[in-house]
Image (cartoon, rainbow, N blue to C red):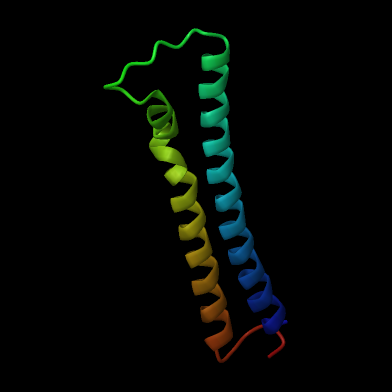
Length: 93
């Protein structure tokens, strides 16, 4: 039972890291598609002193919120796995 809990926490940590990568990639893709749509529809006035694409990518800190949450969650899962694995007493141990 203890091994199952440790493995579940490790798998959950890996899943959180993968999900944060997907979320950050989705943010970048969405920012670029909005930029391209604004260009195509000719509603964007681009100036040499202001990079609209960069500004759109940095909205919401460029997706770093989901990255931070994912890494913190993964760290918590790994700490939980270590705590379970190093405990002397446990379920069915």
